[in-house]
Image (spheres, rainbow, N blue to C red):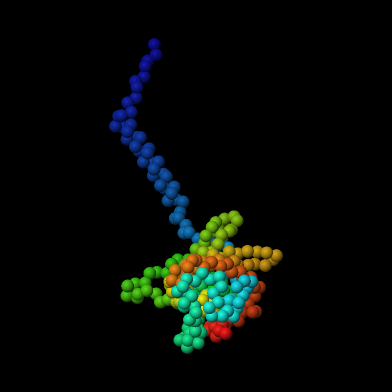
Length: 270
């Protein structure tokens, strides 16, 4: 007769200790493997993660809005501009001589206007998290930071407004090293501006204006282009958003680079 084996008792203290010991060893092994894999890598810098290359020297293609962008518009010529009554009132009181005398010759060279001028601009990396735009027309510089500036202390107060304001950039869309294909766009939001003009004949934007830009790189027949779509929100002077797309062609060298100072739109008055 076969001898019947006793049924094991899984609740004995000794067996419970063995099971618990195996579990602890397993968890410890997983943790050890995690530690052995090395420290987590830092995310790539904005420069390394760029989905498109926007650096280089670019010249404006003035294929639309010619009379305004070339500085020969006349006072009160607002065309398609979606100005509200307050904006029209300010625009019709444009006085370039007063601007020049008050040291405001750069009012038509601020961030919402500078990309519309018929000139050239150079883009390069100031550091791994800042793109620098130098513009020859008006000798202006914009800094596009991929991290917002540190908030001012209570003692320092609010940062001073400037013609180029404060610009915060980010990459939108897929991209970064290892991504295929490398596509995407540069998005820039600018505020903290001094009040100025979109064009040299006095079409105004207020200090409360906020501009959002989208930079896209294009290629055609061996030439490289940038398309920059600008969206300005300014309830103080606009009845609705002001949206335009500007085009630029990449230059092969800087032989035509010729910085000039700001100049009030004296010739815009007839």
